[in-house]
View 1 (tube, helix red, strand yellow):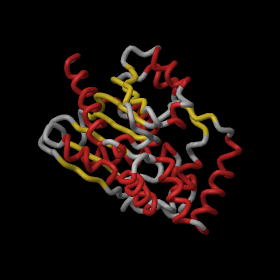
View 2: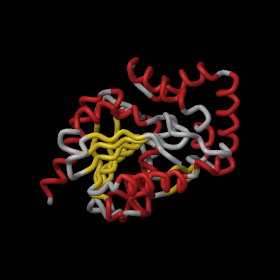
View 3: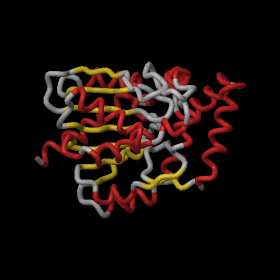
View 4: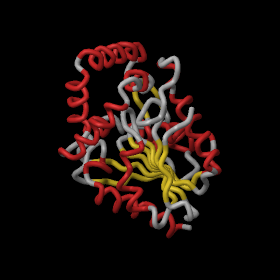
Length: 260
């Protein structure tokens, strides 16, 4: 699986690796490439079936299992020989970060997530129900449904427009990826994650914030983990307010450097 990726600031030692969630793609992080490439090597990628990355054949839910998507990323990390990595994942991209960091810990300096909960507790029997509903709506009411999803994901007109355009490119992937996000639990890993972990809690990301209780408990038991509050943004914080997000992430990275 040859993934689409953007790779800037190659001369820098430390790497910022940005990973999107279900329906997004590498374009989501253009403003982060612009802001951070003078100090970091910056890589953003599009997961299989997203952006310009090809969809698998056959295009089935097992081909979007979290472990499969994580293995795609690990192969790309090894191919680009990325090291001294600060992983930054949005939504499901953060969930994938738990897996990738656990598998190749030696390549990472830190993990930061936003719009991510470490545990999702919907009953597993609902997974095919959600997938069927998504597939039906995307077949018969695609533009209306994607606009509806974008309006609930992003906060302002610019971020909603960007979100819609990303969703358009991920239509074949969305039902299958979301199928694999119904029920998971990485709180055990969060409690003992061996690299610095920061959860950015976005003020208006009400859906995710309402599911963070077990994640916050796990963070409290890990001296390497913390929560940072980011005001006036929602689920796609880096699109809702790029300047505020970049300032927040810069502060997180600088605080890590002071502790070295």
